[in-house]
Each structure stands twice: as C-alpha cells, then as structure tokens.
Length: 118
Image (tube, rainbow, N blue to C red; front, side, top):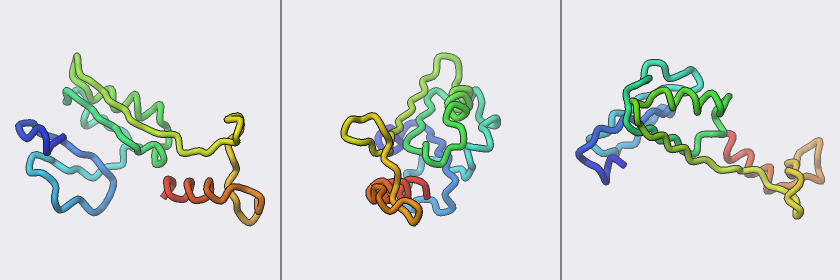
C-alpha cells in the first residue's frame, strides 16, 4: 500500500524483531504484539488492513473487535485470512497431523501446522 500510494502515511504493526530494510519512506514500523490489545491506536485510522496473522492470534474475534476500534467513523476494515487445515476427501473431518503418537496421521498436515504455527 505504501509503495502504490506514496502520498499516504502507513503505520505497520508487527511483532517481528527485524524490520524490512527496503521499506518505503512513508511507513512507520511499530513493534507490538496485537494479542496485548490496540488501545493506543483506537479511533485513529481511515483503513485498517489485517492479513494472514491468524496462526499467532490468541482470540481472532478479539482481534476483529480491537482492530475495528482503531477506525475513525466511516473507516474501512479489511481482514484477509486463510484456513490452513486439511480435510478428508468428504470435507467432513480435519486430518490429524502425523507424529509419534499418531503414526498413521497426515504428514502434510503436520508440515502445514508447523509452517503456520511458528
């Protein structure tokens, strides 16, 4: 967003300790764990964009509520998330990951959970 809309100011919140070196100049990077709340940002933004952080969130409903409170009246919230669980052929049951206690489990599910639950 910051690269395309260079006339706007973007605030990026992440709990990563390393910030991108090639970030645009109109980005203000702030290190913060959104699981601790966003009170300091309430009512300040026209657009809030939350993307692909569900695996690290303790309460996704709480995140939706907190992020929405960060909007000014009439603001827009955009949430983009995916479901990383794998299902059986009938789409009825989540496949259990393989492991020491489940040798017949799904190794791809084990890999997916490991990838997205770092």
